[in-house]
Image (tube, rainbow, N blue to C red; front, side, top):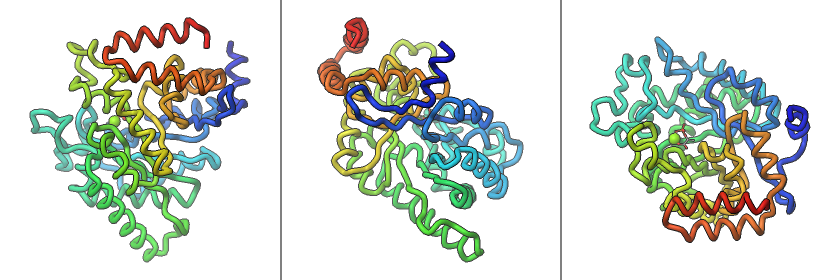
Length: 332
Ligand code: PEP
Ligand code: MG
């Protein structure tokens, strides 16, 4: 089995019917880097930068962040690194940020619905600018993409792009060498508002990344961390899948790359469904990459599309589970 997985590392992520799929890894802690290198992932589709802040006693400045991003970018030896700017708030909390006076969502009744993600960064420009400067400097050392979390408005993306351009101008004035074109700027689609307005966001963004973990939470009104309602939390609830399908087709229509980086991307039993919904780029835990690649390599797109249509016709999540089980029992 081990050998089979090792062999998979060198094989391409292409379906049995010939469609190439981009298969990347999510990174939450730098300790996962060796695992990513071994996994056969084609780059990092989601670098969560919260680790730099969560256990820190003091906020990492531009130089400290640059050192970390640069090391990660260089270790990917030419494969892209998608760096998500700080997604603080909701279930992601940090002492250093609280002590520095950034009280993301803390006093709110519903922190998940409060000041978090990009909203917080736009209100804390010094924090945002230092991180963007560090990312831009790292982009001189390998391909980088920048991802914005918790977006609900086109105006937020426009504001972020203006800040990014301003930071780049400032760095160039400081004679810092940057690549001639700035890194692509992408938007996480993880709120129902973003999914429903995916076409407007796609026009402002260079790429989209669907975050089904939060998209399921906000669509179903079920906290992703709440034990009492854990049985209601379901990223393949038909309502969530309808949003995912909508985002995939908006991206296709507007010719913007779209990936999915929520946990469901790492479940090989769901790979045919995600391919059938139109996705051709997945980012998962490094440990899931070989199994998902195997699932991609045995997928026939036409049967995936038929299967996804059938699933999208459902309204009951129990029926979705039954259809998934039946699909695999058929051995397709
Ligand atoms: C998501 O919400 O699906 C996602 C990928 O981001 P995170 O899990 O870090 O919130
Ligand atoms: Mg999220």
